[in-house]
Image (cartoon, rainbow, N blue to C red):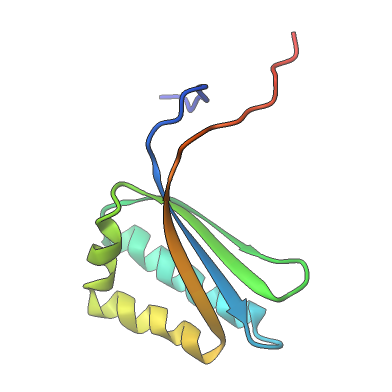
Amino acid sequence: MAATFTHSPTPTTFIVNVIHTHRGKPDEAFRIIQDVVHDVAERKPGLLWSNLAKSTDGLTVVNVEAISDPGDVALFFSDSVFVEKFEQLNAVSSSEFHTYTVGDLVLPPVAA
């Protein structure tokens, strides 16, 4: 099945986790969240995909991920292995995450 874009958004749930790294710790924060996400991908249903990125100014790491249902967040946090891995971020950063549902998809016009 090939991926395609449509002009009507599919009601996808996204998690956006902004990780504000402590000075000099963006690589360590990235490695920790990378370990968390890979663990979820291997052990938990519900993760559709994840994009991990470090800001060019070295101040933040961002995890944007699509999940199958808003309830997946509670499922992830009910797992002691997940919580232990996720809490490692506290030593190198502060973070916040929010859950979003797609409300609009904007694409540039297609050239003829």
